[in-house]
Image (cartoon, rainbow, N blue to C red; front, side):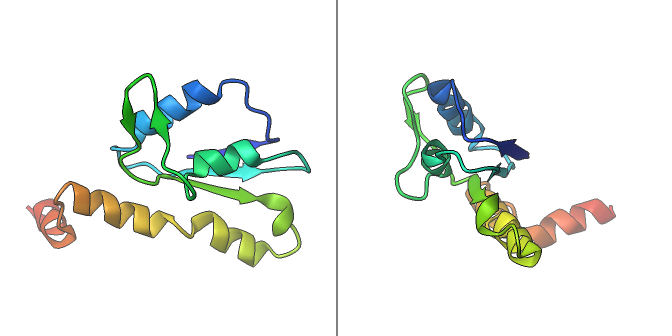
Length: 113
């Protein structure tokens, strides 16, 4: 999922709750910050410094599924923008497979039948 934002978030707790809730699913959330706003809330949602906690569901995030990229940092280098946007997706997929004991070759074999 790709979210373009100007940095303003009015429902931080609800957003945190839903990210925590979705963290067990095979999903990657990529937040791209556009403009010169304060993106500190997006850095919190990224969860690289501290794991997200949902007070509603009373649990921590199961996996890091969020990647935040400030567009202005890469606005003149589209190659690096693409690299940063997609950087964590392969690891997130492998992490999901590992947590759910999915072996890619077995999955592939099942599709042949």
